[in-house]
Amino acid sequence: MSCQACHRARTSPHKGGAYRIGCPYCMARLIASARPVKRLQEGHIAACQRQLGDEWTRLWPRVQQLLRDNRLVEEADV
Image (cartoon, rainbow, N blue to C red; front, side, top):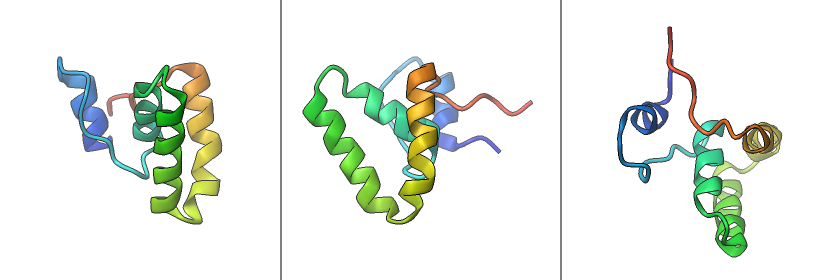
């Protein structure tokens, strides 16, 4: 099932908006939205890390890969 925030990002003409901490695509989109302000990106990363605790170490490599691939929205369920 697709993340609701990713669904909104995929279907809405407005590019800002909702992010679900815990969804790797949402976290990648949140971090990317802060470009080119590095301090803001670092703040988003720190907030995600605080909120997710131990789960962060599992999700962070996936978020990094999505950022490298510029895949910022989860694909629609088919």
